[in-house]
Length: 300
Image (tube, rainbow, N blue to C red; front, top):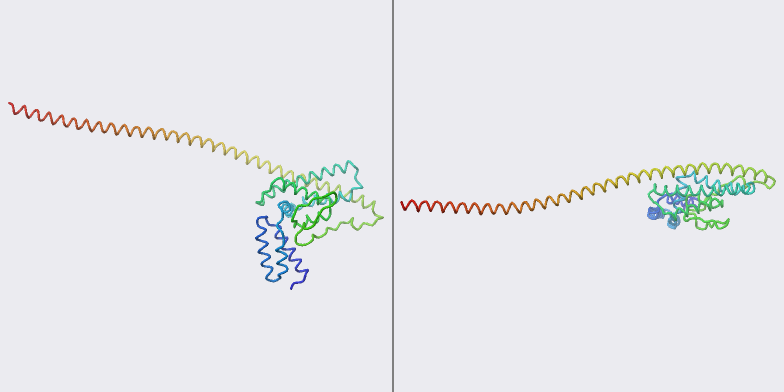
């Protein structure tokens, strides 16, 4: 039997691979991995079999971690620095930081919607709301941030006050904890640590602003591309309607011509019959003429 550490690592690797898949691919891939693992380690196979399919919002957050890592890290860093620098910001700066957080989270959630389209698994607006809610929770709590960083979320997260319930939120074992320099700060270095935290928070905010600009630029580019496609679609629709109308017009003309041809055929058949009757009458008349002439000749 493999040692526990080896089994944990194998479970972590399996979860990492499975939670990178689209939701519609998850169950079959998990079952196949579990079946394969059971051949060598029944316990590992059973633990893989227990991995749950992620909710749509959790899946999309996992994909943002994989495909938009710098933007996600900007969100999480801004949240971490804001938590550490609460005492070094005044009310105006805190309000601005709050607006910045909301703007960044909204931009990243919109980017997530576009990413879902790119990955072939589009989501609806309520899912994007849950994505934003999860990112907000990760900004408010360090453990929730680590859960998001893992890329193995099973469900969306929600902050209730300053608490985030992480029970059964991460698959494949607990996420590694991100160490921060302030965790080990001694009490007598608190003022210096607070000032440093303030500087880091401002740097994180600048980083977040750049991430927002990048996400908004991509969103604007995607919107422009969508508008161009909509214009092409409208133009194609107009051409389709014009050609359909022309086809209908030609079909109506064809029906009229075919009706005229049918009427001409009927007239032709009637005239042909009259011609045949006239021809027979001429023949009969010629016979009468010949007989009359013969009778006259006999009288002479």
